[in-house]
Amino acid sequence: MIKEIKLFKYFFKIFTLLLLSLFLTVIILRSLYSNFNYFDFQKIKDKYLISTKALSRSSVQDIKMAYIEGRNKFEIGIFGNHVIQYHSKDVFDEKKDFFNFWYANVSLTEVHHFLIYLDKINKLPSEILVGVTAANNDNGGSIIRYQGELPLKYISWNKIYKDLFQNRTEFLSFIYQYFSFSTLFKNIDYMNLYQILNQTFSNKTIHNSNIKDRLISYEYCKKNQRILLRDCALALKYDGSLASEFTYNKRLVKNGDTLKREIELKPSDRYVLAYQINEINKFVKSKGRKITFYIPPVYEDNRKTLAREIFELSLSELDLTSVDLVDHRFLRNRKDFFVHFDHSNEKYFKFLMSEINK
Image (tube, rainbow, N blue to C red; front, side, top):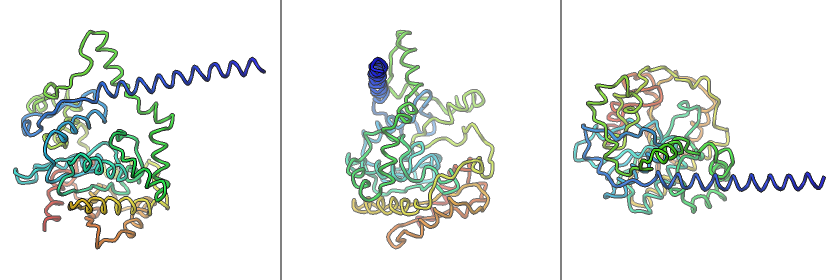
């Protein structure tokens, strides 16, 4: 029995050492791939895209942040997850200073953190639009709670502390997403690990921080559309958005695959969603900025779901005399407003801005 205990302790120490080594490796990989030189996105308008091939989502965000942090704050900025990725500056007057800050699967919870960070570095736009993921888009997913994709450097510890007392479920989701074993292994950047090992043994530079070397021309994408669909589809435009003409999936399927997914909202989440919208609204207005929330449509049937019921109950908790909310879910059958069932296009964004500016 004593021998077994000693053996267990030995293997536990080895496991702990390996785990700490893994943490250190992830930190090193992250630092190697998170430094990019400033590059003026405006120089590539209508000519080039910035390839994000072989980069993690956080590395793509670092490219955008190198630009954002190296220039004056924008006049207009839109925030949200992939549902707004095709909303482009092209719908504005050329002189309008606009940027699309969309990022992966971030929720409203994480958008709030990011806005706090931008204010901290004096880059909070003068006018802010926040895209709210509709209930039936991801069956309630990516609306609230932490998705674990926003790097810790953008996280506000003051908000974490506040959530501990005012929004316990959000606090617990933060702990789970950033400090659980499953998240650690899920977030290891295998592509970056492969690149580093491959380039090291090939005697190549480990990381090229020069964004110019990632430029691909529109003409090149048009000529090689069948071969390079994915590369061009995920490349950044001059305003931070994606080029919808190079999407690798041009089929518009009503409801997408949402009918097969599990619902990701609980009845109690009605209060969490309302809390996050109210908190973002108060924060932005306290900084003297204008803010509008909008719910882009989803190409779907007009179906009643538990996620939609919880979502609508949450909206009823909002003080609409204070919160400026544009709800466009009723445009669900406007096929001309979509790239994919869950991604509205530039034409929709133009319609939205005409509504807001009435």
